[in-house]
Length: 195
Image (cartoon, rainbow, N blue to C red; front, side, top):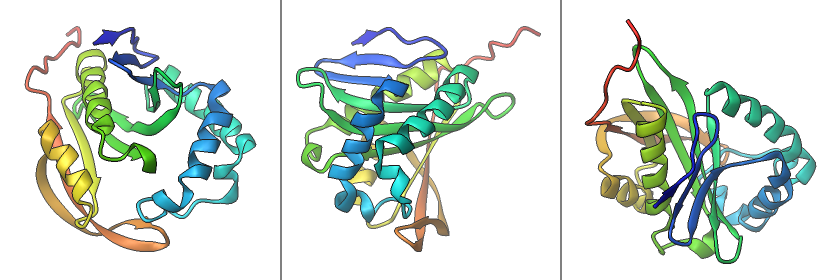
């Protein structure tokens, strides 16, 4: 696995799969990904405003995300097929909290045509390695709707453990949905603060 990551930027490669932070120049590619997968992702995401599907909307959003990357407060990453340069999905690492919690939330989406090929397992493994080894996170938190068996399987495969159940947790597709709460703890975490 190739790892050219820094504290401000994620860039990892596992064979033909690249995980990297989104750049301002990616606005067209990201908006196209969400346009193509609009119906497929609808059941798993919040109701989106029209700007979410337009290049201009993503250009504005990426300016803000770039600042979060620089400040180490969150990372919006793209999964890219290195052979075709096709965007396959997204992994967001948000709500970063450091001392004393050292945790972040993980969210993700995968293109309809990329389902069932192991891309998300590989992408989340790279994201986990980045958050544990570069950002020194102790806990990654991920949630999924109880009927989303694919998400449950991906998270279980990576070692995420069920920690709870949240009633009406997130508004998905215009409706409050229950979620299973899971977490993955870094077994090698060390306090790197200078005391």
